[in-house]
Image (tube, rainbow, N blue to C red):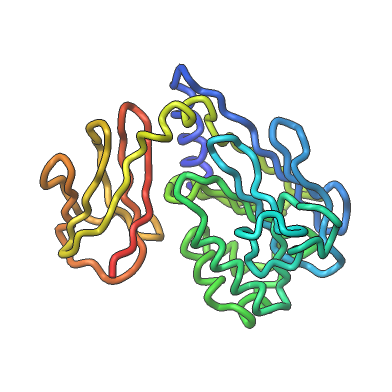
Amino acid sequence: MKHFYTTFFALSCLVSALNAQSELSVNCYPSNTLYNSVSINNDVVEYGVCGQEPAFYVAVFDPATCTAWKSEYNGLNPEHNFGNFNGNGTCRPREESYFVFQYSDTAQLTGMNTMINQIPAGFPFVIYTPISYDYATVNGNSPALIQTLSSMWDSDVIISNHIMVLFGIQGQPATFTEDTLTNGDHISFTTTICDVTGLNETNAQLPTVSYAGDGHFFISADKPVSDVQLMSLTGERIPAGMLTGTTLLSTKPLAKGIYFVHGTMNGREWSQKVAVD
């Protein structure tokens, strides 16, 4: 079902006359090979693995430019220090376009969990597991990370021991999908991302959302918004309605946590992550 929603999302974006989407490709092998890679429009963004030890590999893309976040190196990108193994040139003496979190290291997995929750709304990201995946080790060292991954993707995949590719656009639960190695010698995953032209023209006009208390969410936007929905972190739709043109009201009590407000403005979809405390 998640594959269907991803396909539907990609097709719906194609109706825009301003569409300039790019194709994201990920190759994930159950071995240490240079063919493990992330590419945009067949141009390799990053390749290979970082050492012999199995790990999560995470790539995050800025939707305005469709370029990947760079790892910390030699004073560059200090904001991208998430406790990842390949920080400050540990693997190669340069910035790298993925972040590596080894299964055996609790601190690294904690950093990965923090990183996932800090990715801004609208940013595509992909997680893949070359060489191998060991659920028991990951769960033993960071059950919080397993809980986060299971809340976003199919929990049966997360608790398996198959190598996998996990993809999603932060704040858009319908885009989250996964692929595992069941046939063949590797996973070859592709999807469309970025819509660079359209985002460049509308980024400054994207709505912002703040929580005003008592189930009220205030939406600040330059143009009228429509189809506004309130969703939980797992993508469950929460009953809510527009009280005014700028205020969304939940019709049920909200527990503390992270929620998504999703809607349409000027014919384009948007999502914002909001904390309720």
